[in-house]
Length: 293
Image (cartoon, rainbow, N blue to C red; front, side, top):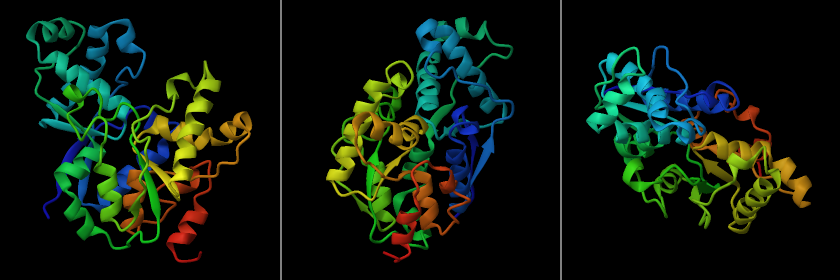
C-alpha cells in the first residue's frame, strides 16, 4: 500500500488533558502507514465558545488553520477531536459563500481561498483506509473482548455539515472493532449526550447523564466503552469516580479511544498508546486480551 500523507490538526485538548489521544492517534496512524503532517503554527479553532459570540470571528479562527493547510499544498486535513471537526467543517460550510468568506478574510493576515475539506481521524480510517485493509493489517485479534462504541452527540451532527455515517445510528466504530476481532456490544445510547459542556457549572447533570451511559454499557455486557471524543472520554473516564460518589454507584469500566483499540490490534505496546494515563485502570482488560482471565 502506498503511504498516505495528510495534514494533521491535533487541537488544544490533544496537547493537554487528552494527550494520550494524540499519542495513540499518531502511533495508530503510523502503524497503518498513514503519515500525519502536523500543520505548522496551528492555532485554537475557537472550540465551544467562539461561535456563541460571533460567527465571522469563529470562522476566522478555523479559516486561519485551513489557510495553513492550503499553504502546505493540500486540500484535506484530519483531526481526532469532534469539537474541532465541528468548528472546521462549519467554517468550511459558511466560507463556501463568497460574501461570508470576504468578510471573514478581513480578519485574517493571509486570505483563505476555500476548498480544504476536513475529515475526522475515524472517517479517514473508515472511508479512506477501509475496514478490509485495516483487518488485513491487524496482527493481534481482539478476540473475547466486548466493546461498546460510543459516538457522542456531535460526531455525526448536523448531518448536512458533518457528512459522515448516520446521525442517529452510526456504525463506523462498530464495524472497525468487529474487523479487529472484538464484539461490538449492542450499545443503545451511542449518540446520547454525556453532558460534557455542563461538567463545571452543573456537575449533578453531568453525573446523571454519565451514569446513564455507564449503566447501559454494563447492561449490554461491555468490557469497555470505546469513544473518539476527548470530552466524552474525560466525562466517562476521569469523572467516573465522581459519578460513583454522587450517584452512590460502583462503576469500574475502562474507557478506550478507538485509536487505542486499533493500536492494540497492531500489537503496539499499551504504554505507547497512553493507556497507563487513564483514570480507570485498563490492565484487567489487557489481561483478558492476553488470555489471563
